[in-house]
Image (cartoon, rainbow, N blue to C red):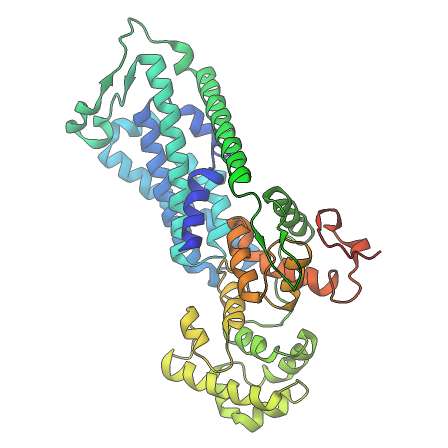
Length: 443
């Protein structure tokens, strides 16, 4: 629920495509001469975003990474063509008015950007919600700008609404002020730029006021962590700088466990408990060519699995859990790893952290699995301090922006594994040393 709320707030306000990212300016400035035109294109864009995000999320597992962008564009173009035909059939007057700006949705950076940033990494419901939220955020901006320009230019609101909603909508037209002649400045491109500037300034002032109120009333939220006295977390701006630097240094992070399917990842994560990724990869390099499906693994039996993983700690109990998991997957899930937290945590040897890793890495869920490395980094930097891994996880989910959530687990774990190590952290070569609140830094 919190993730859905973050997506809605992000799309409508915090990451508004028009007012924050300044995307889609061509249609934004061109079609907002009236509120009706703006509403029509906004709804069309929302429909395209919702459908394309859902389609791309549903097909992402079968799309090779090397050709994903052309595939995304083909999906977007197909959906836009269908939406264009719908507008042509049911709102021909608006279709003529909007002209080329409907097919231009195909090249809109908003649509392609959400496909790459969210839909290709998230579940279908979250992807659809993200598309809807981003589309509605753009729609609200367009309608607001269109209303301002129409009101100042013609003195009316929702003129021509019948072209979109039918004859009954003529009653929606409101004449606020009677003009003998329209105010051309508001209706022409300069008026669009002036109106957009006013909206940008208004959003900035509101954000500044809200931030000041937040700091005054709540300030930084505090907590007790790692047996120390209560200390404040770093502020929002510093967290964003930390995440941005980690992303710039590693734009496409992933796990260091070798796998080629959700099942292989599940088994590898299970084996990695009390073991290093290197030792697990050595074991699975021998195991997976022989058995990399539940049926094949079950055929090996407990003793057979032990032979391949005996170099890993706790291999006896792990082999038993592997066989139990394979049997449950075959009997209850058709031999497929379920994309469901409760079902995963019901498997022998699978806890919340393992389920989080599988859901995040195999299925692209925007969740954060917290291990000892992430726990250490979160507390040392004061990014999201907590007494235990559950508390750190909840705070990370609260403070990490939606656009960073899918990859945050990998950035933090790699940073803790190679830079912010347990003994003698390598602060001298740390990307975020100047942003870190750790009081016992080393050279």
